[in-house]
Image (tube, rainbow, N blue to C red; front, side, top):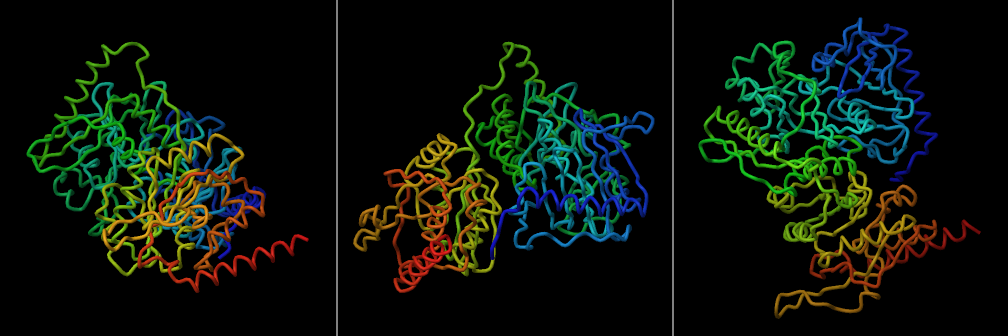
Length: 596
């Protein structure tokens, strides 16, 4: 299909058309307004009628500004409505559903003024005009909003708002004692919520679970966002005294229940606290909970990856904030033992020890500034490549490039690729789709990626040592360059030794190897994605289109890709390859004729 970038005017026109719908909804049902003070900013929610109010306001109630204290203006105003209660339908999508991504981003909607996202989990549309500080949120039917989604309402819009104020939403929990807070972060299911609840019941202060707002400097700070906590059904018995705080039906097996902590725990929910340390929980076999040091790189990956996967538009700035926090604060692994109730004591000891060290810290002794690298998204398309997948991912990790995200696109494999993903030595973003060919798999990776720089690694290929850092450095050295590219060196399998050895000249074998370069994200907006109708020659076709459109490509006289030739290579079918090259040649002629 033809994915295309929408112009600034098109995106602004769509925003205005949606604004007209919400204005009509308000005319029909009346406006219900509430102001909230969040992380030093004021956000106004303007509901069309009462339909969404009981679903979205309880989690924010502790931050609501009393009606008599409301001002005339807000930093951001968000309009909310649902079609069922107002009778006002949403416009048809201005794009094909295939342009929606799992995270909520929409391919081709890259306006600097208008942010746009669609979420499948609640079928919501979210828009924000960053210049005029106006947001819009729509769902079709409030009664179909998942129960667990009421724990963190409109988080995408709040994420965009906070970004514009130098703040960052982060997936994590924050608890503290006195004026010292611990940030717990990492992916779901590792014990953040249960640890936060144990500490709350032990008398700790509680800033939030699931999502909090953070600032990395000049003093690392955490801000309260939602007065909720999500726990698994199995943990309800463990925290039986909190059952009265459940609202609505108990969650189904496999889902989490939502506890609303306001007003019962309002006295222990400060609006903000300085962050003293960061910890990643992990469940271990030992009896008691203990705290052990963790490396900065592990902390950065744990903190950034889990947030990156969930918030539309999260990317380079997220990594910069996380890097600032991890460069300033001490980091630990919180090893959660089998014996329940031991976590609060371990957390309290950790915070006391860090406070003592802070008193002896020289003035101004914060994190050391270091040059910021761009976030690099590595796309690995896989079709029946189970036996190569682990070595491909380990090859990426061996490059020691950070910040990085790895996206694996399973293009309809019939082998054990999916099971192999679960055994990989790092967190990856995984996507499965029906078989559509290598171009379709790469395109999916591009659409789902977060970085401003993208690289591609076929599952059976490898990168030479430290080549990513070199390629990205060359790319960032000249803002006009769109692609930095080297050559692919073919390696053939030696039957006698079982090893791969160099074969042929790289300048002749793979002059347009997609994996031999790094690409600015913007070049795909301008040139378009790979042609998914082509099973062969899509690389040559894309580079021909790029050259014709005036994209700036920088060629390095280096081998930047190692192409392993084996019995499963698609290009072993020379007749198909020849037909693909002929199709590329014909398309180039057609473009030339059309331009004369």
